Image (tube, rainbow, N blue to C red):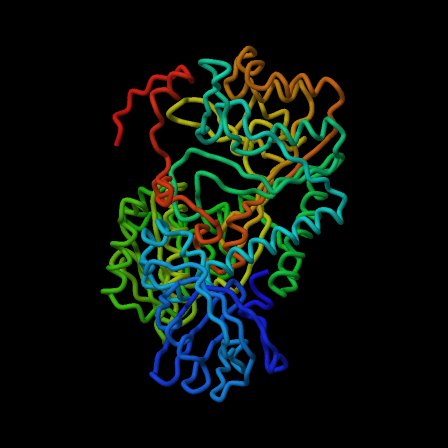
Length: 585
């Protein structure tokens, strides 16, 4: 070994020991007669000290030749610091080198390798191997490691077996776009990278592996944002001979163990909410329940008063913002413009202030009497000092717009503390959603999701009313996991494919292997998949998953460090029997 100790290990009890450290030069402070070097590795920083009359002139020459990020080996005696630094674990000691060896030189890095760096996102992504030397990024990956280990420990204790499934699979038309891989040995044919191991984990249930899990890489060729990457990781799980309640209890247990062992938090029993209630009260199937401001409907009270915006609306709905009556007209106008942005698309915002004397002042006073507005305050349970914000329009659009407004007000009022965790199960999703453009039904989750048994008769008569045996786990307004009880009956699966617009031939071509497997005794089964990157970023108190992935892509799906994706040679294209029509960049 090129070191006897790490740079974060030594303490006052090690004084007088001769040690060897290896690491990177963080900083050099040269005061002439005294020179200090901060030596850094993954574990911490240890200060080296050279003093005139104690350290040799040759050591001073070597030390003064060093630059930031040089790789250095230092051997010397551990001594007690005269001026201790309580801000670092090694702050009571320093090492007085008797030998200093440059293991490798380094160019000056393009940004500071410090907790607070001067490097922007693009620069940090280009030099990701340098960014990974920074403590915050390293701690993120250490958190990821810890969560993976605790997940494996819990799953093993519960009798699950980790099974790897293929990465080169068959392309399927449902869901997001597939990444496809040409087959040289089968010209004109393509593999796909898995969006999830869904069919394989169901086949494992048919195989008798009644408790499967995998921490697995998945791939989706879709537009990116802060919490999306083209390749991402799932905790993928499946169980046989279970009902929905068994899944909820098992994986609530997993999340509870992660909070306990990783965060030191004893998580309370996770509340449950139906999809219908989530949409009615929050306008979202992943509500942030760290704060209130539940939706209150005003449709019946607001219509018929001669105000066209309300009279012509399908839905009039609002939120009560506690303590926000002090918002000025300028602030409300700014909020209105924020809502009118194309990303949200609201046409306007109605407000009503509850004054300290209990009277209500509204932007629509001329249409509504004081008694009407007092009725609003009662409906919203608004107290003096509260601000009522109201939107109107088409029901679905208006709920989505009000959800954005609610979240924005929660952020502006400091009610979305990342260290305050609120976990929620959302249940009873619709099985299907109708695509107006395609004029057909689509599976809200995937084609293998089982309907609620009592809703099966509605498949032919009222498909939109069929509820799925499906569930999502939501933490702080972010969906971190979702799953369902699966269809395991061949006839019901065939009905589902037919409803989704598959011909018998298309269903056979895409999923014949699964349908065939169901003929050999498929057990009742169900499962869940957690977004591991998202879960880790939530535990780390961050919005973006990018810093919890060692080598992420940017918002264009590019790895700017290795410059990928890239063109390939004509020879490779010829071998694959592929002709490219794209112009090289």
